[in-house]
Length: 362
Image (cartoon, rainbow, N blue to C red; front, side):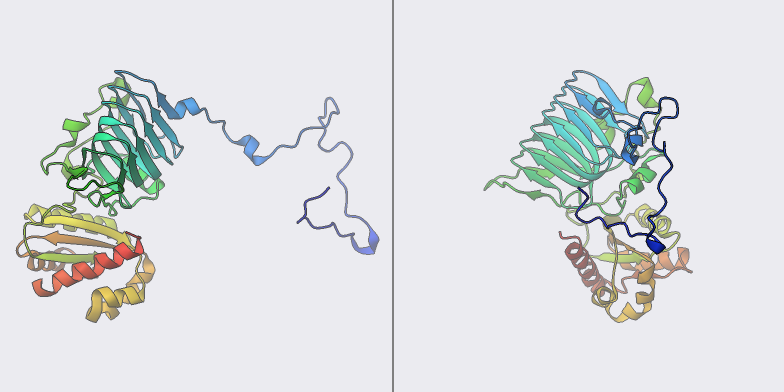
């Protein structure tokens, strides 16, 4: 019986049936036996789940080098006193029943889910972050969406800071932007009245003091740096209290050097003592531009068709004047939106990030 949606074969003109395959087609030439049909999925490399699992380990240093996970799912479970490094991008990762482990997880296209873990220190980059029934996790996090904790206590968070040569391409392969990081915007599904189940790591917290560089000879081949100035992800203050009541919004528009230009402005401003509060990469429409850029919107609307914008918020006394001066000096041939004055800057920041949060469902 044929497929319900298949078409009947029409006779050729003159009532003749279309040509039939010659006798013997699909048969083994040597034996004459009929061959089993071969499908595209039969040609795929077979995946051994053991290559994508760390389970039941104690007092070990283990990991996967760049290119060894290549977007597959990964499972970490029942590990104790281990150092675990996934130096590659993956689809999803689950971490269950791990105790006193130090874990690095390269970019995760989907979700990372910690369950029933305690006393672990982690560096994680992902689209979605969630914990359930965990205690005392300390996480340097890059997360594109709002991180969620559930039935978890003693959680501490800091901004992701890490570098190795392959990491930038791994972020692209995982579909993650280095500018979309909501590491400090935690949602607690199970808050307890009068208590706080989570907090922020000290500003002075250094990654290597929590998750040291790998000690095994194999993993030492990855050229890791935990120097904050080299981090793939810009280091942001997040929801920490701002040092000044003056902020400034700068927005770069899509082009060949958007990321490099944004990083250059960050370096210029932070080297002068200003703080990077938050960043965002997002698509905008004409109506969004009117809401955010207001009187200047018509100048920037034609640039929106080229791709997403990258927005940066800087904070510090004199931030607006310094940002405008730096943009004029360093990016004279590039269209950049910069707040015009201290009086308008606060509204600029609110307009843009309120729009971005609505777009991203925050």
